[in-house]
Image (tube, rainbow, N blue to C red):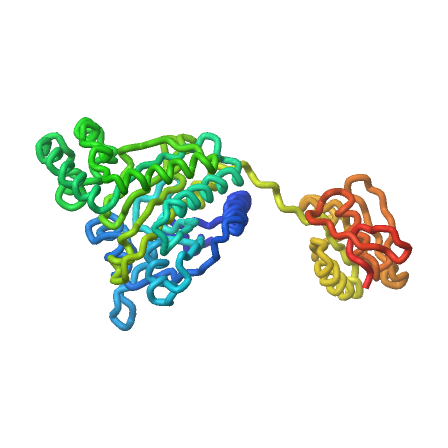
Length: 441
């Protein structure tokens, strides 16, 4: 028997508990972004290649080694998005969103990078993304960090995750620090790894966060940014940290946390954990006041972060398994025809329900039980003639009848009475008493 086509290496088919975890992360993200007033946006999966080359940097590994770039039939070079920020900034310019500044937006979806697949890392993976564009206020940085912190709380994974924070200063600070770093690293060229020697010419700040043990002694003795901070840059960072303290967001300083590209300014941050084995980043971001300028737009300060959905999903507890608490078992052609309408009516009234299509009564009941159904609605020729259905409680075995015209109401009340429904609806009956469920039509 042929196995058929296989999924491409570095991709994943998400289902079952894994899909439930994925959905839980997205639900939490949507809940918190609404609390913070971030508008949901949808972005193209591919962009003109120059959007990423100009924003991420021609010399970075992402652009030079990891992007999925291809010519379309018209000869234009297109690239599957390796991240969200560049496309959002492109849209900010091309769609005229400047008039909405400061703009608070959030999105999530697949991103693509050609890298070696490993645990928790794929060539097509998924990210959450949140951005505030068009303000240079340090309170925007605080807002985004509070959003991220509350998301982790909502997911129940805040414990064991640490916010590491640093400042990259303003342009004057960064230029002075970069000059001092280059001078320091040049003195120790013979002690650096090949990767760091390549970075020394193009991206010297990246040497500071090198994972190569050979680089650590040189990186650890490099000049610290605090020695070069302007008064304005120091004041900005102080406002961010005091804002976090006021918001109750715990943080720790990591003076070696950097971003290599010149358009990054001021705040840089990562939420890290060791619960995924070696210390790993679950959410990261920073202020990128020069990015929109790099894309050809006017000076536009902005700050944002991204988080891997798969990584967050690995950290959360198994979500509550979704169940269908009611199942409809029609017996015979007439009952099947009637059941279609009853299913639509019950679902329309907010009762989750499924129907067992095949097999004898015993097999159908077994299938309903395996699916977690608490009540099974039995419908045959006798029930149709009597205008009622038989409801079997799968937990107790007890059976009762309910008029077909009020079947949805009966099941709704049972679900509500057993705490199987959220946001239970009540109504006042004609006799003045309050009833659980929807009022009769």
